[in-house]
Length: 116
Image (cartoon, rainbow, N blue to C red; front, side, top):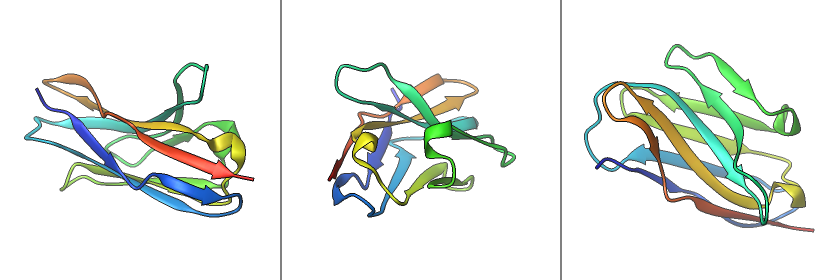
């Protein structure tokens, strides 16, 4: 079973930056939309940003102007540049990909903690 592997999480002070990366652990068929979700303590998992294979992006209102999603289609890799981080951005961040054969693929998640 193909999974996604995230990296780049960690502890950062408010106002700082982090860059998350995500790539498949094995061969995939054809990935369409890729995105990032997050789940804070006691909260549901919500979409943060997504990007179609053609480059169309969508952001949650809470991260617009601070986070930027990008991807490398040749490597099936997606990135999330997070700037001006706030304590409320603290969460486990999950990568998701929509593959034409495997369907929705998830990563294990990476912890992002923003201290005040």
